[in-house]
Image: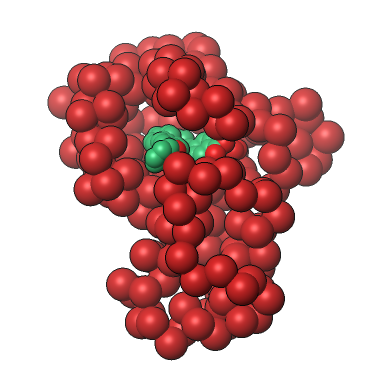
Amino acid sequence: MYGLVNKAIKDMVCTRFGEDIWQQIRHKAEIELDVFTSMESYPDDLTHKLVKAASIVLDLSPSDIMQAFGEYWIQYTAQEGYGEMIDMSGEDLPEFLENLDNLHARVGVSFPKLNPPSFECTDMEEESLTLHYRSTREGLSPMVFGLVKGLGERFDTEVEITQTQSRDSGADHDEFLLRYKSE
Ligand SMILES: O=C(O)CCCCN(CCc1ccccc1OCc1ccc(-c2ccc(Oc3ccccc3)cc2)cc1)Cc1ccc(C(=O)O)cc1
């Protein structure tokens, strides 16, 4: 994952729990680095270690950590200069999700080590859609709940997300039913 992700995790911990909780998490994760370079690519394992250590130190489940991170990612990337990119990708929540693979393709042009997940929308109705999430990475599906919640806040749209299929229980990809109020 690009360092931007690890920087966002550090930033979320520092702003919400303080610097010394971050140091405890970094120590527990046995990570020497204290500064992550946004445009450098780091092993995915480093991010998994951070999530696991944060879950122990904060006494929260890894799923809670990933949901909180997903939500934080939306505001963090907007403040880190990707706000226009997000704004260009859709006028509303469904349109953004339909364009998300294109957004990743655009980022990937400049940053070839990007290994983005794929998001596909089907069964699109006025106030609902099915979101298919495919990733080469294991166990990050709780992050999708937070990402969608964060998008709801960004688009000022009430959204309810339920997982309808899960890789953990044998499906070939994760699937979510999204219900939202169209303004
Ligand atoms: O792999 C998985 O299964 C879960 C990945 C969860 C994080 N994604 C969230 C995607 C997303 C979902 C909903 C709404 C918004 C989302 O993200 C928008 C977005 C996506 C990518 C970036 C991005 C921008 C620059 C990057 O790299 C940099 C950063 C600074 C300078 C140079 C390069 C890396 C990602 C920014 C916003 C974004 C992402 C971040 C990093 C990677 C990667 O390094 O492969 C792949 C995807």
